[in-house]
Image 1 (cartoon, rainbow over the protein chains, first blue to last red):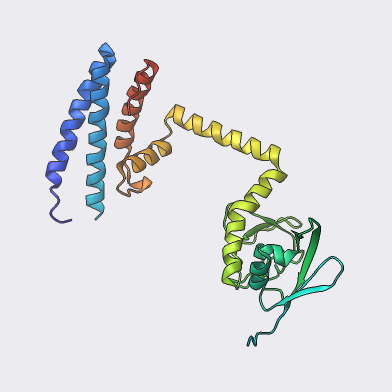
Image 2 (cartoon, helix red, strand yellow):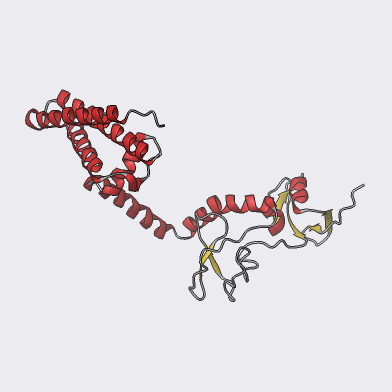
Length: 59
Length: 208
């Protein structure tokens, strides 16, 4: 587990969170389905990346 | 030649000896019934459709809390003199927590069976039968509890309970995270996701 690239995972988490937040704002303004779906998937990615980081930190 | 002493004796309703066995298990296999049935007596259909009640006599095992509940097999603690215990459903085996007579706690002492077969039987019984028996004995109480549980779950889902969301994250990520490890920021993130999902659902769009 020592070879896990945590920096890369952090990048993924940050970027997907940004995308999610933007899509969320757009969804709140326009109520478009596409924006909502994008926000959901982006948040899911963020969650998963963060969960992985927590796991790596624990190990 | 079988040298084992035959302790288990099976009688019919007229008290005539039908069979002798060395073990309860042997008798159960012979008559095609469960172990507890042999120990407690059982009815059996004969070939002419007459029912017979068969009782068996034999050495008693160190069995459950209700029969010999003076001392815990684990720690040797004296549980109760009055020998009346409520079987706690769903806890596995005969764990007697509360005495009906004196309302004292037995500190979760688990009473184990000596024979492996009875151990198995007891766990199965406690998981299925005793729980079901309790439900049947207290139908109104059980219904009330179930309704309350359902309401609580609905409330948790509706109000985005933090514990509920943390559990959800643990389940969805599938990497054996513990609930306490999840920070509050992730919970907020999940809340946002759930709010969007709910909004879309209200519009008639189902998103996984």
